[in-house]
Length: 260
Image (cartoon, rainbow, N blue to C red; front, side, top):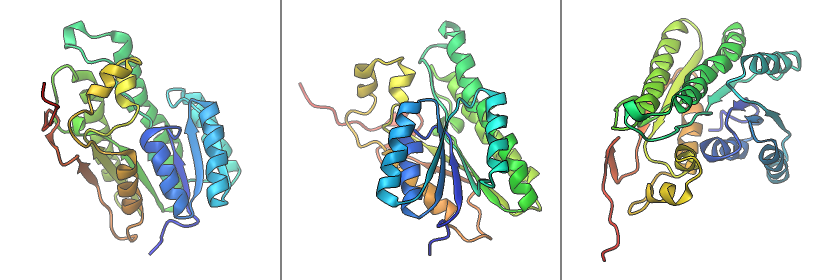
């Protein structure tokens, strides 16, 4: 059964990776899309691609979730236009650097926390009251296995994702008595631009992260997200950890690398 068709889905970080794959998946179900990201050129090209393939209008907005005023202004515009999201996919997030804590870059820490935690809060705070007022909606937060297990040289990124996990749980508790659902999808190793961003554009180093095994694909996560959103109204999947078969924890991955 398709319970997604005709629903309005707002996705942050929609120009690449899991956000982009999720937009394509929701479009295939007939959802009305509102896509946000920082890269206008990618968003515009993606909008035309989706509209051509699915025949549905796609609304886009160049948006940095760290900009609280811009977030609040945009959501107010959506409300005025009657484009209140039925589904909010808080996907925008990043990891920067891989350092021992005492050697880490404070600028990286600030950008991760501002995006992964504060950005998620800004968007959710703007959208959630509209869902509560209508007594319907679904917030899906993209967490990480790093929100369950800490690994060396990733303390601050892990802390930000532990924060997302806590916010997901707290949000669900605060919405008790409403029909608004809350879900966290927590992937392990997934091959996106994640590692390129983490290593500040070092594509060779990023490539080694995914060698010797089959990582998750953005499409794998998108399929899970649409499954979760498509559940009946009385069903809420609160937290779902998904790993590639070769990975069994945040820091245990079986790799078969070429010999010699």
